[in-house]
Image (cartoon, rainbow, N blue to C red; front, side, top):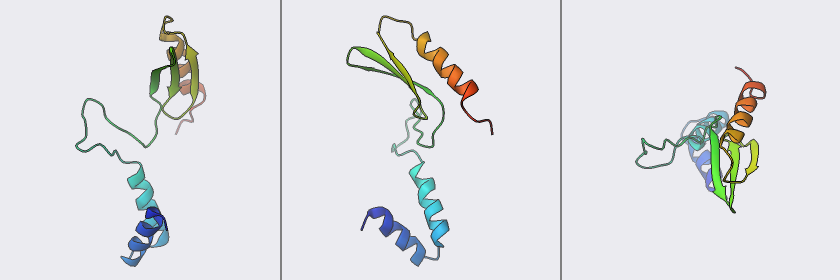
Length: 97
C-alpha cells in the first residue's frame, strides 16, 4: 500500500469524504516543501509560467515552468532566444482564465 493510499484512508477514517480527502492531499502536493522557506528562491509546485534556463552538456536548455520546452542553445548566444519563445508561449498558448 502506498503512503498516499494510507493517508487517504486515514483522512477518511477521520471524517473526510473520499473527494475531500483527495482534494486536501492534492492541495498539499502543490505546497512548497522547503523548510524553512527560502524567501530569495520561492518554491512553487503549483505550476505557473516562469522562464527556466539551465546549463547542461555545454548548452543552455530553456523551458517554461509548466513543462513546455523552449529549445537548446549554445551558451554564447543571447538569452533573448529563450525569452522571445517564452513570451510567445505565454501570450498565445496559455489559456486566459
